[in-house]
Length: 125
Image 1: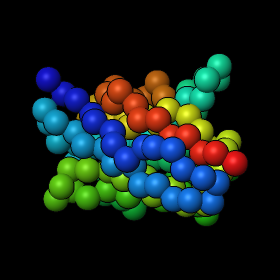
Image 2: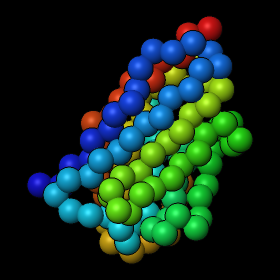
Image 3: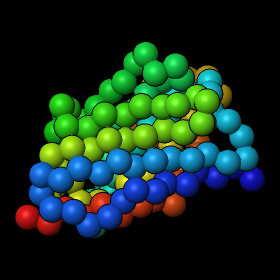
């Protein structure tokens, strides 16, 4: 069974940093684009950052550019989201996602076949 497990969320203050990790199991995603999405209460799931299979292409939500960095480690089969200068508006459940097979890094959630359960990030002011 293919699973994506997120970790690293928590409660922090504005200006703090967190690093989220995504650990796939059941298969590797070395040739697949992967990404991070988030969903705040009462809002739709929102693209945050995506990365292509070899890490050469990344896309970010405008409001996180310069603060968040997505990366991947093929040797460990993991994807990370480094979040700096966190804001209360970043509060949400963050989800790791992976495409099925080859495909470009896409900001559209419907392009991703595999999803984790999410990890809560809460930023207090």
